[in-house]
Each structure stands twice: as C-alpha cells, then as structure tokens.
Image (tube, rainbow, N blue to C red; front, side, top):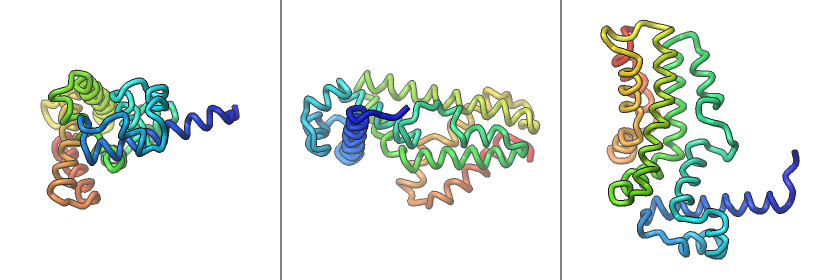
Length: 206
C-alpha cells in the first residue's frame, strides 16, 4: 500500500523530531533536554512534538526503538534477519559470531541512548520502567539464542540455558560496550572479537 502525502509528511516529521531528540539527549542529558529544545532543534513547534508523541518519555522511547531497530519497520527483534540468520546457522561458533555482530550493530546506533536511559532511570520512575523493559527484552532474545546454542553444542558442565542467557546478557550489555568502546577507547572490532571469544569460553566447551 502506497503511503499518502499526509502520512509521509507525518513520518518525516516524526523522524526529524526523534533525530533531534537523540542528539540532545546524548549531549545535554535527558533531564536538561526540554520539549522546547527538541522542537527548536527539529525545526517544528512545541505543539507538533506534543501532538506526535505526547510526552518527553515517549520521544525518548521512540528514539531508542528506532536506534535499536535501525529503521521504523514494525518487525520484532526476534524476527529480524540477523537474528534469524544467527539461529539458523548450524555452526555454534557461527551463531555466536552472528549474535555478537548483531548486538554490535545495535550498539553502534543505540549505545549512547541506552546509557541516557540507564543514567536517568535512577531518579526518573518512568525511565526506570523503560530501562527495566529494555533489559527484559534483551534477556528474552538471549534466552532464544541460548536455547539454540544448547541444541548445537553442549554447554559448559552444569550450565543451564537460562544461566547461559544471563551470562550473554551481561557480556553483551550496553554497559560493557560503553565501558570498553566509549570509555576505554577500544575499537568496535576489538570489542566484537573479545565478546565472541568470551561467549565461546563462558558458554561452551569449544
């Protein structure tokens, strides 16, 4: 179905607003960023922002969803091509490599925004809910990966699939990515190689 002119303009406006908001949230912080500032950066009125999103929390949540997905297509993470390819890879090390690469692609786009949410969650109940939901979403994905890995190769002795998912959640967390790449200055490729090796060692006997 072709998008009509009004829908296309609304979609373009929402994209401008979320892009402007992401830039401000990651430079000035969530608390210091006002709807007025977002509107000014996006070149729209405050009312347009309120009409499109309603609240600043929704602006941030939408910007985060777009950064994580890489587009605004309504496709859940577990149905994304990179996830399906990783799950379908018969080689357990191939799965881990694809799993890490997919997480890395997300963090290139979303790591700084995720850090904004994590930091603000300590004092903002609304963002605490957003952060908790994000953790649960990431854990759900890692559980699917852990179950698939366990079907391809024995996990380390005594390690359940649930525990493997917890370990992967930790190793592939945005906090670790931001620490190593953002704070310690690692190249993205170095983080990717480290993460893949860490999962291999921590989860399997390979």
